[in-house]
Amino acid sequence: MSPRQTESLLDPLLEWYEMNGRHDLPWREPERSAFQLLIAEILLQKTRAEAVTGAYVPLMARYPTPEAFVSAPIDEIEGRISSLGLSKRAAYIRRCSRQLLARHGGTVPRTCSELLDLHGVGEYTARSVLIHTGREGISAVDSDVERLLSRFFGFDPADRDVQSTVDQLAPPKRSSDFLHGMLDFAAEVCTPRSPRCSDCPLKPDCASAHDFADGGASE
Image (cartoon, rainbow, N blue to C red):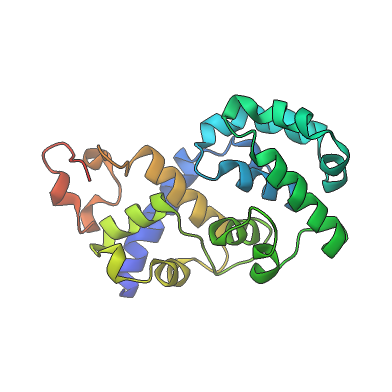
């Protein structure tokens, strides 16, 4: 990637995010603790943000700490997230909370390796938590991020280390905005089947814009 390619993605993406991003998602509130961010990421795994929003605020109000989750009856926790179809994750959260108390004094660790040792935490979740708690110069890759970058730069994800690519792109002082921007842009504009190329601010430099010139195509 040339500096020009990087700028042609970063500048319009971050500008779009400032104006159109989902800034009202409750886990993006600046006062959220690292633990509450971790719980959000566990709930968001393979689940749409809009679905999690309604259950997240009352869940965190009732169980703001690892101690609160560990001391609560499992069926009570399951009931609070059953509307999401995520009742099985109650056990993940309880086990993760116990591990935090036993291994880290109830605090969320600040290294990827320690986070990956927690139950229910994978590479994306670990990286996202680190980014949101102040780790700069890295990013995280899920299917939406992979789709956005592969379309823009015109590469096959099977032939490229997408995680390395996104880490190179991550701006040193705006890693969280960059990740949020990619997620929100992929959800609102660069969608899987009918991308809104006609009003996409990345279109002038997007390697795949011509592929959807007839109104969008399925992947």
